[in-house]
Image (cartoon, rainbow, N blue to C red; front, top):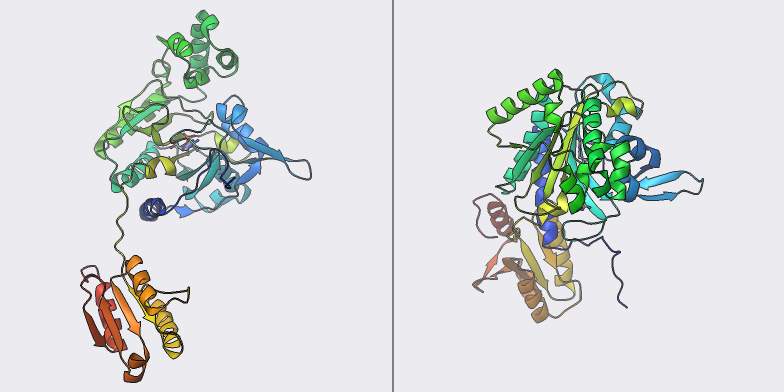
Length: 421
Ligand code: HAM
């Protein structure tokens, strides 16, 4: 049997990896423009970080974590998301002590034991940003517009941005009570999970995809009816800022998100008309997470973007290949070819040559397959005459040039309007 990758994981092969690279380039540029600096986190954390951070009753913590014991018996978990890790690092290294806000971004693999299907994997990748230290809706706007600009720059148009407020510690308890009483009326229709959620964490019932549970939720009270004046004002300002920034959005009173740490703003960028895996990126405000994990009271807001889900929707990248393929005879010409290859790389021009010890004819074929626009041919004649033979791989025209002339042409071609080499 051929070896294969574990269920729910996948290889990213070229040319898909080039679309992936493009996403990274666009995102890094946007993070840099907005003043976010990279944090590289471990892929595993102590399990209790996620239990305390994401919430015991969430699907992620109760069903989806890859958890194991290390040799000392401590429980470790492969990170299902990065926000809890960012907050752990923020507290551990006192990152807020030199001034706020602290603006960080990250990218890398996350792990959730979900049922694999298109757009849903057990190992997937996120890139995201966290803005720590501001309670102002201007920080929410910065995070949402950062995410919006990345998606827009990639050419993904027509996405729905849905926004909601899930309230805060002042107004949420009353809402939870209201929702609990409402759900109690239809409790016999709820699945076992939702009956448990109804008691411990009633907002989680909104995460259930079962038809009976969704039906029971019909007519449920909405958080918007319960928001306290501060949460209401926060949402009002955010709406004004989004409008002023020209970012279209829709208020979605049932958007609660699957993680417990959110307060006030939550949002998702969704692909309209698609089912459960329709969120390309998502996030929200988590004003209580830093304190609940042992840090100083620090409001914060962030987003994460699902790399696989975005790459799935990108057009293939048509990367024009530039540079040279060096074709050479064995012996001294080969040594000259190696010198030329090194010099080309030193000058920053792409260059390849044969590594299989093939004949000149086979090397010419390989040059063709490598789709470099120019072949440089080196035989005894070239060596003795002190010149190089250039072959235009498109027209097959050949000419003799000096090495300096080759570099001049490659230099010219490397400019944005520089032609095909
Ligand atoms: P999340 O909604 O759990 O939020 O995940 C964010 C994005 O990751 C999703 O919108 C989706 O694109 C992608 N994603 C999630 N699960 C999978 C999966 N199994 N396969 C493929 N892609 C997936 C968070 O993780 C929060 N940390 C977001 C955040 C940052 N909130 C504040 N700051």
